Image 1 (cartoon, rainbow, N blue to C red):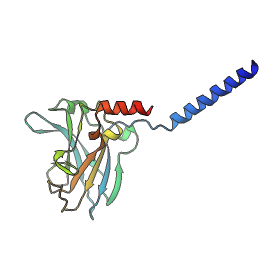
Image 2 (image 1 turned 180 degrees about the vertical axis):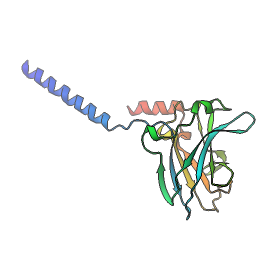
Image 3 (image 1 turned 180 degrees about the horizontal axis):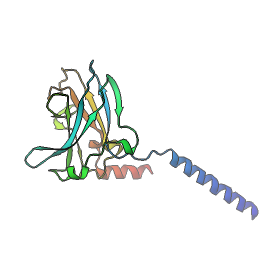
Image 4 (image 1 turned 45 degrees about the vertical axis):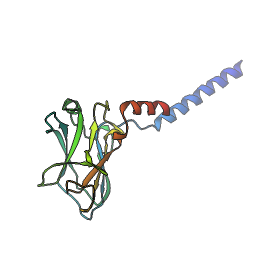
Length: 184
């Protein structure tokens, strides 16, 4: 009997240790918006900003917040990609009440008008997060990827070099929840 008791205690300790080790490698979700910027031009850009807001029933863009980007260097860079406390967290609840509840992004170069960012390879769709489909903006929902291309990019209808991508446009909240349950 003593043998089984010792074996049981050792087994419980090992299983607990495995569970703690597994959980320590799971990175918590990071709430808010981060940027991944791919500058494929031969120039750097300073004094740029992202503007977020909604489009109301009169088809007017209502600005809610803006974020001044750091100097955009040639190549790839991450902005706000750290933990939760440094992510950009505009007032998503207010944006959710505007029009269809979609958070649209404008990009502004210094001394130029702000323009909507076209969804990469689809100039008929503006970059946005559907806040009705996504209860919270976290990780892939808030990973905004910006591409700066040369002037001859066929998809750049604004003529300002910027297109973008958000992974969250591929998933609804329900699909995301189902995906998480199947991974468990």
